[in-house]
Image (cartoon, rainbow, N blue to C red; front, side, top):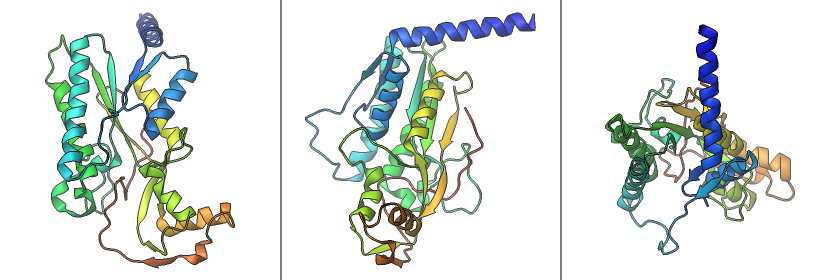
Length: 274
């Protein structure tokens, strides 16, 4: 009987995944750095993919914190509302950020059970970090309040500072730190560290979260290693010099506060698997 139940469960999952490939996957923000990687991977795996992109009428970069935070929350809820109205969506994978976990001033290791507290001020209170925190919380709260008839599965992916191959000629914010080092954009580097992760691991995490029976209701930190800014300079210098500047050209300064537009982190727990 146990084998029969397991076999039935396997066949049902196989049927769902076949339907997923037949009816397709929607990737929002499909022109983004991470999203283009996800679209490419899904297409290579045989999925039918639809994508949405930002309005061509968008005026450009936001001018204040409210223009960063509010669209992130409203945009997330808008997508979830559309999923509810459609009635056929089985699962939503939300791209959050390590900023929603690791922006607190603390010495204790952090994991997926932790949430950032922007009341501390500093880097974690930067609008981008707050937007990711609030959007992820809003997503879970929205799905939790749905009736059984309307409810669908949800999980979130929380990557660190994403680096790696890009499929477009646009330099994302994530890759800007690499570009600045390579072109010699800074004479001094701050004494800070970043929690890096390869975009290919981030893409794979999204696809696994889309299909794994373990994923619903979970949060997954996707991180690799912590590197200091000066270590990044040395790695790039050793690999690409003389195409880029030598690491010896950089001095180092100590900062007490750094405001960036992508997440940094101090602790990670890479042992959790989908």
